[in-house]
Length: 416
Ligand code: HAM
Image (cartoon, rainbow, N blue to C red):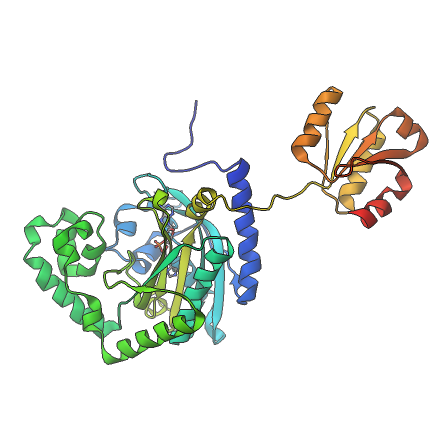
């Protein structure tokens, strides 16, 4: 039997209902902040991710799904959305507006070792904002993510905050880290040995080396921030205080992608059951990425949230997700074409409607009523067909009424 690929999942039943609920919650929520929806391709030119996410990162080095298409082009399934959204922003010249605020919702792919909360195909909801560099915007974007999770019923959260400073900061700091880690060269993993010269910061979040005490005790970037970066960071924190978002400074937070500058953050759930996959959200500012990808010099920032992790938390917390109710179940007792006409008219007038096509026994039909739990049951048998009426049963009060077919839609309009 063919099975689903390793690290992927089928969503059905409760999980699928939660997924759809989160998707529509996202659309409604993003209206509050006036963000517009953007959809970019699931695969892009491989070089976009090399240049965007960064050659030294695990995501690009080890985790991309690459393929050569029939036209001999190197393509990659997106491991994240930011690079693709930036490409689209540049290609479609969306920078003519002073500020652009996008959100997205869809699949991303990373060839990771599958484990709880870590998949090879997963869903991200995220935002990207272009055109403005203002610390209060950073605070607003962080609070947007925090309130989004709160609104879903996830409240036991920790916001981890750090600053990677400006270019001067990162240059000075990279040198310091390089000097420090050189002493430990022999103990570094093979990938990190290569990283030491070109991209020492990546060693700090290496899945292997980043966990070692020596690496954890490396110099901290906050000690090397320039005056400008310090005052920017102070304002971001002030903004978070004003917005009532609790946060913790975490000087070891460097994030796993190369494009960040100044503000970086993650939102972590305190639920023990999530184990290591407890980071629900990650993001930050990327002021040189648009330029790096051949666009105009435009600041940007954003974040992404892992939807499968949110589903796991909601299930763990037993958060109640409202179920879509079925308006009407039509019980066909006579197999007359009129039944299907009635069903079609009901759906055409906007009532959600189910009809039983199988010739189940009466017991079987009432079992279906229990399963679907509709507001009303429309019963149509031979008497009803002859008299052009239906028997309408209110599933809450259990009262039955006879309603002429010509008056059924009006009756339901008034009562549902
Ligand atoms: P990221 O930290 O790589 O950031 O991913 C964001 C979130 O996606 C993670 O916090 C996690 O919830 C979820 N996630 C990542 N990998 C997996 C996986 N293998 N399985 C399940 N969930 C996963 C980014 O992707 C950046 N593009 C965020 C960003 C947007 N920064 C600026 N703008």
